[in-house]
Image (cartoon, rainbow, N blue to C red; front, top):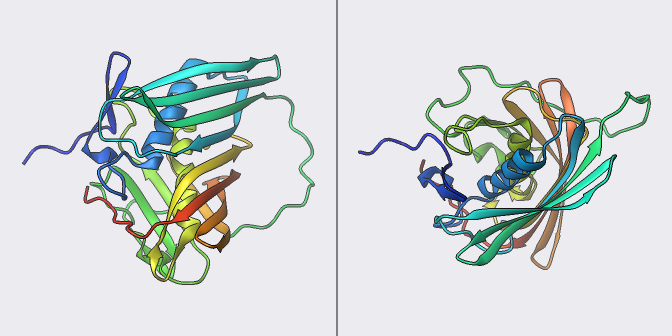
Length: 264
């Protein structure tokens, strides 16, 4: 039996070659969180600045990305002193299979925090014995109890999750905090659209807003809303780390039964 790949992609010049662990739950395609993470990774690599906060990331997943080499094209749209905007495209076989837009804002002095916000229940972070050790992405889902898969979400009550990506996105390159957040943002859809019958929606996009970057390897999400009608759904969630909330996520999705987590 061949050894499990140690990263989601290997780099070959300008190409990124997905490995078997990049496969998503909707067939022989790259998982949305792995594609979104790569877009965030390249934008961070090419345009990251310690004085700028990546405050908003939008990822469009409008075409299945095959388990085949792809390239990421980036383009600066605005390069002002306080605001920077960058677009990126994931290209496969000459076709754009996904794209991203990032807004980076210049950091400054802390502002007063006495502004009302919705309280969020944050479950206790997982201990070292609560997650499997052989999965590229480790998780603890909370809902109807807790589980190391998504079965705890098969109910009509609140849902939460803690995530930890063990495998790096690109072999030999460190996983940055923004890339971790970009991967976690895709989970907003499955978290908010999961119910007693499982996940019946496939997401078309997701948007992530960040007031700060996550600290540490874990990122958590708590579902806030799910609204659906005529096969179209929207969902929102709060993202947090062990120190508290860091931002919000929103995802749109289409009714599409057939979710089947890959056997990593």
